Structure formats: C-alpha cells, structure tokens
Amino acid sequence: MKTARVIFEEDSHKWIALVRDPNRPDYLIDTNEYLVIDNNDAILLDPGGNEIFPAVFSALSTEFDPRKIRQIFASHQDPDIISSLSLWLEFNPELKCHISWLWAGFVPHFGGNKETFVAIPDGGADIAVGNQRLQAIPAHYLHSSGNFHLYDPKAKILFSGDVGAALLPPGEDGLFVEDFDRHIRHAEGFHRRWMGSEKAKNDWCSRVAQLDIEMMCPQHGAIYRGEQVRRFIDWFARLEVGVIRG
Amino acid sequence: MAAVTQDSGVELRRIVRTNEEIKSVVATASRINLMAMNAIFLAKRAGQTALGFGVLSNELRRFAMDLQKQMALLREMTYGSVATVTALVKQARVNRVLERTRKESGGSGLTLIDEFMRTRHGASSVRHREQIAALNRRLNQMIADTAQLVELGSVLARSAKIEAAYGGPFAAALMQVSSDFERTIGTIQRSLENLTKQQDV
Image (cartoon, rainbow over all chains, first blue to last red; front, side, top):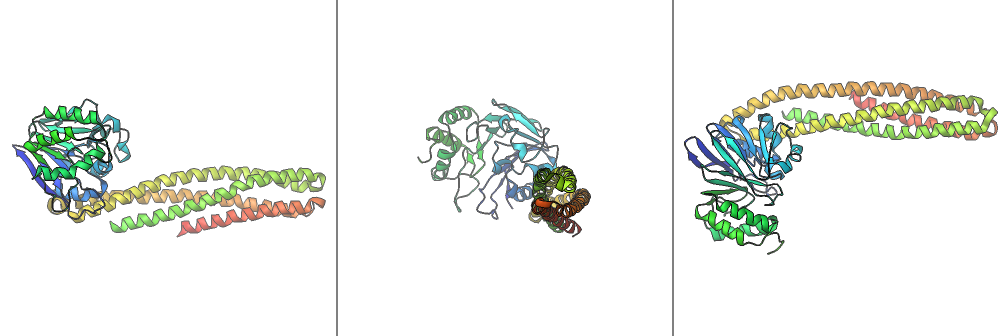
C-alpha cells in the first residue's frame, strides 16, 4: 500500500500526497498521486494506472472518503496517468475528468462517456474545488502535446506532472528533495529525452517563474520546496532538451 | 468473488470455442455455393441423360443460397457474442483489481470496498447470468435451425448420388460432384454436432 502524506493544511484546505508503495512490482514506474481537498470537496490529480489502483485507493481512503471525490485532473493522456479512470468511475459514475481538449476523444478508451470529460482549452482554465479555484497552466509538449499543470494559489503549490520528475534509486527516494545537486542528476536524462521542445520549455519557464510557488510536486520522484523550485526552473531553462543523449 | 471471476473465465473460454466452431462452419459452407454452380453446369452439359440430376442441382443451389443466408446470421451472432465476451472480460478484470484493493485496504476503506463489492457483485452477477443465458438461447436456436437446413441438404445430396447413376457417359463426373456435396455437408453436420455438444456442457 502507498503512504498518504499531508503536505499542506490550512483551515479546510489540504494537499495529500499518495506515494511510495513498497510492494510495487519493479516493472511499473513509480508515480505520485495528489488529492486536493477544500471544504470536504476533492479533486484527484493524475490518479495513476489500473495496476496501482489498489495501492492508491487504500492509501487515499485512510485520509478521505473516496466517494466524495468529485473531479479528476489528468495532466495528459499516458496510461500511468489515467488508465485507472474506469475504476474510479465505478465508485462515482458522476465523476468529472479535466483533460486537454486534444485528448478528450482518446482517453474515453480507458473509460467514461461524453458526460465524464471536461475539455481544457489550450490557454488553460480555472477548476473550482470547494471554495477555491485551481488554475490549469499550459505545459504543452512537456512532454505531451496537450499537457497541463495545476497551480493552487492558496497553498502556493504547483502540480507539475512530468516536469521535475526524477527516477530515484532505492535509498534516495525520500518524499522531499533534500540535496538539490545530488537529486537533479536523477532528473537530467529523463528531461533531456522526454521534454521534446526548447521553445515549449522556455515558454513554461517564463510562465511559472511569475507564479508564487512554495512547492513543486511532480508525478514521479521527490517534491521541490522553497528555493529548490527557483533552482529547478533555472536548471531546466539551461538544460538542452529533445535529445537522446546530452 | 473469486468464484464469479473463475466462472466468467470458464464461460468466456466456452464462448470462444463456440465462435471458433462457427467460423469453421462458415468457411466450409462457403464452398457449397461454388459446388452447386458446378453441379448445374455439369447437368446442363449432360442434357437429356441427367434430367433428374438437373432438377436436384437446382434444389442444391437453392439450398446453398439458404445456407449462405443462415451463415450470415451466424456470423452476425458471432460479432454480437464477441462484444458480450469483451464486456465480460473487462468486468472480470475490474473484479480482480477490486479484490486486490480489498486485500490492501483497512479500516473505513475496507468497510467501504466490502459494501461496494457486495452491491456490485450482486447486480453484476445477475446481469452476467442473464447475458450469458440470452446468448446461449439465441445460439441454440440458431444451431437447431441450421442443423435442420443442413439435414435437407444431406437428403438432396444423397438423392443426387442416386440420380448420378443414371447419367450415362456423365455418370462418373456427376457421382464425383454429388459425393463432394455429401462429404462437405457431412463436415458441416459434424461441426454443428460439436456446437450442440459444447452448448450442452
């Protein structure tokens, strides 16, 4: 089972990270899922693949009633992001899934119907959760051609999907980045190969540099906090991407 | 829940076997039409010496056309059963994941998933049974109708063999055509018997 870790809590606003399943088979890439709760309303970010549904569900239900999850945010269309959709719909058939308009006709192959999907336009959109409004921030071509991140202005947290992801070796897989220089070595190869566009990367760096971010939460690896967020943006801006080997 | 998943697995394998047998009947039946056309041409060439065979070859041609229509219906049913099979496979997979989820959950999560699985299990197993029963009823009826039609074809083939003996210089060729007919129809009959046996298991 994964562990549910509260990473932000203020009044009735909460972020829970669902992370690190010791029983995960090694042929499946490790993923982080996040639940944002506001006033008893919740949105699940990148709920993960079919195979890890039991680990995510069981960890999540230790902190929140899964039937009360009203929305899902899918940063993009990959199977490790959203192939569990049909299972979440079993629990709440009214669930809404926010995803780029580009994938709104593809992801229903994993489950759901016309009513399930809320297509996000290229420029982004606000998503209401409880009394808060979260912002879907464009991150197209990083790595998917229809890609969004989610910014929470109250918690000052950016859910950054595959950007910031690191493939951590055993023993260095803590929830938070402790030593940026040591950590970033595990992120470099991934970003060079998976992030396909210099222009998209620079656009993203300019866009997020204007946001007030306390935590940057990727879908794989560890969470960046405080000054590490700025260091990551600077590092990413300088990194040559879209290459097989650096 | 594990038993339900296993049961649906057994049903699925049976439906797959049935579909494979139907495909073989359809493939064999497609040869009948061509054979009936040959029989008509041969009877025309034999002329006055094979009048009886000529009448039977026209009947065989009509039988071949009826058989083709029946095969088209069987093919349609195969497509339908594939859709049902797919839905059941998906359901079985969901059941397996939910069972794993139950094992991993504790406290309120376990209570929730237990409650959910009880409700879902009841509703879905009734639905499964109904779907499979309806599929089997339609298939049994279709097999019985096809078997009846093929029996008529078998009688026609036997009669054609008798008429072939009166075909004078064409007797050997006519006998060859009618024997081919009989063999092919025999193959279809055996496939249909297999299908009936599978349905009875």
